[in-house]
Length: 270
Ligand SMILES: O=C(O)CCC(=O)C(=O)O
Image (cartoon, rainbow, N blue to C red; front, side, top):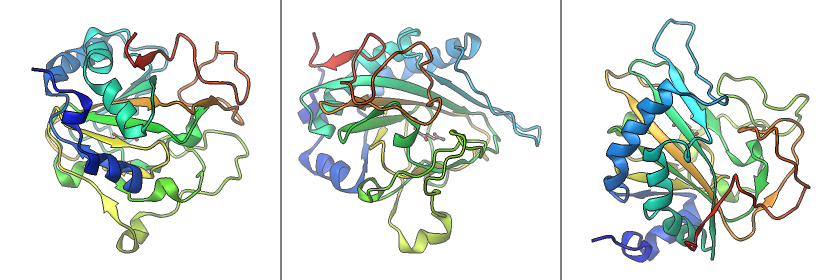
């Protein structure tokens, strides 16, 4: 029996997402884990032009990343389009519609030493809106000490922190916007959220929530697909340089409604 968004997600969880900027969803994507795991292997053998793999100087294991590939591999496509994800996205965003923006594949191989630095996602993107959600979907068990973490309430700080690549370089040249605060130094003064997760779980979070993730100092892989959605109020935004992910062939006006074949409306289902 397939459960609908109301049965999979309580009002309390929606409230937590809205007020804290992140919420754990247990077991909602279990039926889509195996095919998504298979898609990771297909994707690693056939990366897109956007693939960016960090190979640490220490000679340790790589951190494979790819973007905007959900429609190219059946296992990703099933998770994004056939699971309850579109309906859950609309419900969390309190939006009549849910449009997929993109996916980000993140595989930290065993022993990978790359820390995902604290950042917000919103400043990297060519889309803006108040109604946004990403689903961080682990395809391996991740214990509390290695899981992604969030600064509760940071999506409501009214801040847009300077975007940097995960290797520490600025995304936009001459960017003078406020630097991301030193969250680790301030941990005692902030509410940090993070959950041990199993394959089939997801963490849903706003594009504006500050988040970061530890390295993978473990003998097991940490495979994740993170899927981004926008709602009714989404608009294109021009940035001071090439966004991440980049859409070099896309022509758009600043402030225009966010739509087009790259970003299909998946809720309500057509
Ligand atoms: O999994 C990670 O290391 C980081 C994920 C992330 O930053 C995201 O999904 O926005």
